[in-house]
Length: 366
Image 1 (cartoon, rainbow, N blue to C red):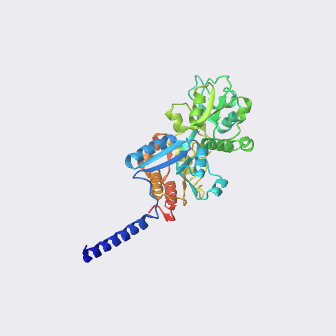
Image 2: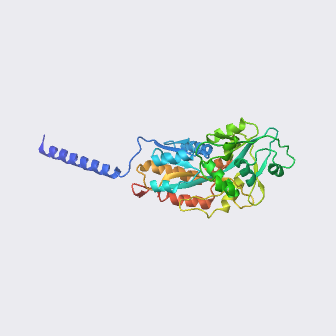
Image 3: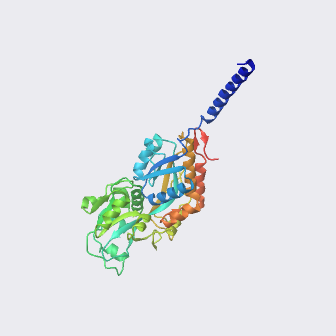
């Protein structure tokens, strides 16, 4: 080989090595998901499961390279999965505890929509029912145990209520739906707040009287009510609507009879618009608004603010959340399914948090 040709070959080889090194250094700060497909795994609340299922399909249709899996295992299960590091995000209606934040300080709750919890009932021959807070608490305390009790009859003039024992269904698993429901009972009944309490799971007084029956998830409670005459339970509004289960109207804090709907939920959100904590949590039960539905709460997605290593996955997750919170298509789907989309002021609070999310110490959203 001629000396001049050999010299050029050596120079080209050196240049190739340098370029390869530079290219590798440029990509070393960001871990890439395998292949061209990004898969996000989430689990948690069953409360928003119907709308999450639709949202995921809609988002995937527009972003075919992003696959999102969400398993409805209850808020408690979702929180545990997030703390154990087995999911990329979690869904939760219930709030994280101080102990959970201490274990993983970078966790952030993001409200994505609000939903109503409704009392469902199965009373043969009765299609309409009205309840108020003290009466509903009395039923779950086991102190009102007949359908023709004077407290129920007073709220339902002209309705032929039977002289039958009330069978009371409740969740058997840890549930954000239960936390919302018991928060309402605690707000309207000092006895409930003091003796039973508020939480994802409680000791139900009706179990001690033999009137109680547990069901896992919204489907379990719904099945218990639908298959048991003279029973009552609680599920999310969207689940009751989708399965055509009768649910009661409520007398709210203003003394008005209201039906659970997107409009009555938005009225309740407006009543507590300035009640958010730094973690973007707010309780909205027993709202004082004239047309407020009284048993409701926000459902949240839980994400990491700083401990993100796969930047492609983090970017895809944030984009999905932004779309879910701000897209008119996502809002319409939520309303159609019986949820209340976030007002614009609350959307802005969520977007501000998303812009603070980091991956490898760099902000993800530009």
